[in-house]
Length: 242
Image (tube, rainbow, N blue to C red; front, side, top):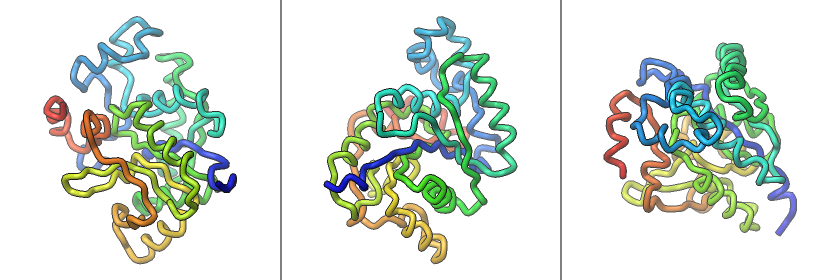
């Protein structure tokens, strides 16, 4: 195994979308909109002792909280996170994330920003890989059920692999063959594929070919844990996912 393949990892939360289908910024939608057991069983309750605090936190906080809990256990990862957002969002998110310290003290590790120039997901991922010059684990701001185990499973596969030709570690739906693009570990080699995808207008789902990708099929609770909330009616679907 060549050390350079696994040298460094950075975590990126993607928040540059315009949420057009939702009609409001998904990142700041309250966790209280989710089924009540989610907040009642939330692990931050051990600190805050008040379910109302959890209910008033939002989807973006949830993604940052998931990563924050993991960082001390991953010495090869940068001990901060990056938020990928548009230039017109940066000031808002800086102020918004600062408020978390008042609402939920010590729940969010340091955050830096990578600006998304509005070239879609491929553009955002390319910007992150270009800026960081290292492997990245990306999470969206609209998948509040992602667990630490979901993240660690992909990191474990990456650490055990010595194949420099693998550019993506992710999950796949065995029913339709659709890969998760926003909950993935991308190696530095993926940057060239994303550049090509933008040039040729290839959909992000088709950017990394099968020979360059390691996938884990959905099983058990994965369909719910990896669920992205894109439109209002998705919230009503949550209880049907198991």
